Each structure stands twice: as structure tokens, then as C-alpha cells.
Length: 433
Image (cartoon, rainbow, N blue to C red):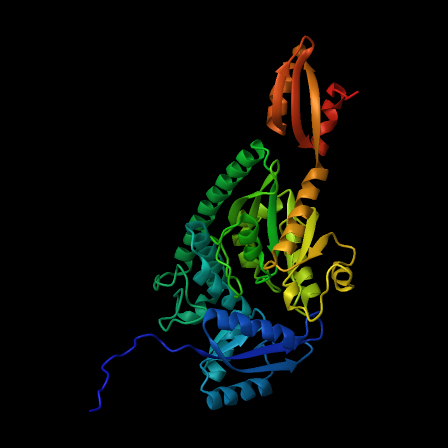
């Protein structure tokens, strides 16, 4: 006897998307490579990509972004493939978005809205949600005219999710007020983070920050070095959004704080960079940047450039850095240590070529980090005269005091401190005979 199921699902089917880009010939990235990355973003956001197209054009069309012929082609493609979403590989103007939606009958989302949508899905902490909402509001404010003075459409879907999507009656004035409130909250967050950084500096524990292109393996490296799996590490773009800091034991005497930061990407929206300023300052304040690169990606050099551009925006481009070319296990040929692949990738940069899944490679990285901090610090034994007691107090602030004793000449201090801070105290050094 046939049994009929009465089970129904209320889950909306994934949106079917067509990707489109304009190749002006002015970018270092090949248009097809950039569109492949966009496809990864679309899949991360939950869309099914059913078609893609690139138009070679000197500059994007002012009215439609794409040329009229290409728009007609996309409209026909959407009908044949039953697509309901058009995703463009650049940020477009509000008028371009309205015109495209009117002509094609599709919902239109640009690269910026797509990335903001992914961030809205990934934000877990209250700080992350605040920063994403601020970025979304700044992005949506000039687009309200085409949405009937609402923050998001009732239909939902990619580009419409986020902390503010239920505020359907919010007009420009209220949005500006919300932006003001969020900015104030993020400024308070910034002040709190600054206080935490001061406390960390006072503890004299060195700080390193993991930076790099999204999905390069930063979280995997943090988990491996910390000996835990607490930080989510998935083969997804922007799998980790909220920064995480762990205490890493390099050896019996040396420990550091290692922070995993948000991944970067080419054409990263400026609204996100400004909104995440409080978080990205963790990078700017670090003593060392560990720049993680996906060695298996053919565009790794372009990804490095994209990361450096964001570091410039936050004033961290001149920080000391160790390059970690990760995912070496995915390279076709890599024979350690006698090979040319490592030399070709590093190109004179300080770093290592490893796989985060290989304990031997992680040990090489650990030694690199340890060596950096060993060279940037100096161990001293000082005799501070009793009439210079204020120096003892100051040394407790700027150095890690290992031992303290007294003799008839003054206070004997054994300590470790930064080479750059040591010069004023070298005249009190006790030299071993």
C-alpha cells in the first residue's frame, strides 16, 4: 500500500543567480578570475550560480553598468535559466541598480551588497553585529529612493539580510540617527579595545596578528599553534569574522598573544573598512604581522597586493611581517628543503612555505616567530642606583622583570625588554666578566 507523506518544507529555495562583470582592461585581475571569486562569494551567501558573463568595455555604462546589448542578453539568459538574481562584480550606483532591475525584472545585487550580506550572516558577537549594521546602513542610505523609504525588501534574500532588516518604516532621518548611535557605540568599543591593548602592553606579552586574504587558512593556523579547535575554520570565504586572541606558548620562556583578524578581499567595500576600524586596529597595534597566503591559489601575488592595500588604509603597511605561504600540500610539486618553489614564492620576503596540517611545518613557523621576538628583545642585568628609584618603577612598566635583588650599590634587576626601549638603561648594565 502506498504511503503518502504529509511533510512539507517552509524553507525558501536558494536563489538562482547570474554573475556579470565589465572587463575594462585596467585591473591586474583577469575578469574571469574575479568572476570565479564572485561565484565563491555567491555560494557562500547561499545562492546557486546558473550563469555568468563578462563584457569587454572601456568603462561601465553610466545608466545600466552593462551595455544595452549585454543587458538584453542577460535578460534572455535569466528567462532560459529561470534565474531571479543578477550579481555584478563591482559596486554600482543606486540609479544603475534601479535601471537594471526595471529592464531585466531581476533583483540586482552588487559585489559590495553581497559581501555585506555574508558579513551579516557571519557576525556572532555584539561588536561584529554593530559594525556590520553600520556598514549596511551607510551602503543602503543612498539607495532608499528605489525601495520606498525602507531599509530592506519584504522578499528577503541575498543583500537584504542583517540586523536592520525588520525596520521597514525607517526613513532617511531615522537611518542617519541610527548611524549616529552606532558610531557612538563603536567609538566606545574602540575605547574599550584601546584599554585592553594598554593592559596587554603593561603585561609585556608580545602581540602578533594573523592577516591575509579570506580563506587563506588563518584560523587553522591559530588553532594549530594554540593546540585547540575553538576558532571556526572552514573552507569558506569569510568563515571567521569576529577577531579571536589566544595565548601561544612558543617555548618554556616565551609566550605571545596571537590574534586572528577578519580576512581581506579585493574590492573590499570602504564602508566595511571604516565600520571595522575598531577591530582592524588590533592589526595596527600588533608587534608583528603574520601574513597568511594561500600558496595553492594562482593569484596569490594579487591577493598579497589586495591585503597590503587594506593595511595601508589602516596605517599598518610598515609593520614587521612574516609571510606564511600556507596549503603547500596542495601544490603539485614541493620537496623540502631542496627546492626552488619556496625561493620563488618568498622572493626575498621573510617567511615560510608550509601546510598548517603538517606539524613539521608548524614547528618551522613557531621557530620563525620565536626568532623574530628574540631579535627584537634584549635580556639585561642592571644595577639601578638607589637615588634613581623612579627608573625601577619605569622599568616595571616597559620591561618584563624576571628577577630582582639588592646590594650596596642599588637595585639589581634581571629583565627582558624591547631593543628600542633599552638604550637609556644600558649605562646601568652589569657586564659579565
